[in-house]
Image 1: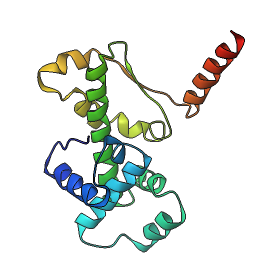
Image 2 (image 1 turned 60 degrees about the vertical axis):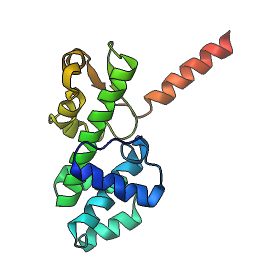
Image 3 (image 1 turned 90 degrees about the horizontal axis):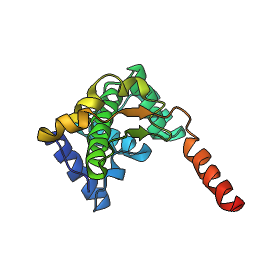
Image 4 (image 1 turned 120 degrees about the vertical axis):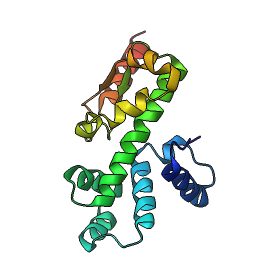
Length: 167
């Protein structure tokens, strides 16, 4: 279940709960999650997005648009959405690292991490990853890496399938 970290997150939880009922971390830290955060922040801003952005959000993958525009700094709500996404991504990665005692490291893979690598390196992600109170010291020893090949999970699945077929 998604756990808010500040008052804005509490409002985000309320917004998502009104739409979806149950709010898992996947409603927040995923491609669609980035768009969910953006929609919430845009509603909270109290004014419409610029027309060029509204058109792109309708024509293209809205999460990809929010990420791209946020990285470029072309719209303040997209920037805020991406920053909040990165913070929540770091917080949940830290939660999972603790839950699994991932002492060998945490690997961020998939479609989003390589695209926002520059944002992940700005410090917001690691601050949230490490921000676990008395367990900060343990988390500071866990390396975090970003897999740049979006197809890496497929390569791993293919390798397992090949091994299974060979035996």
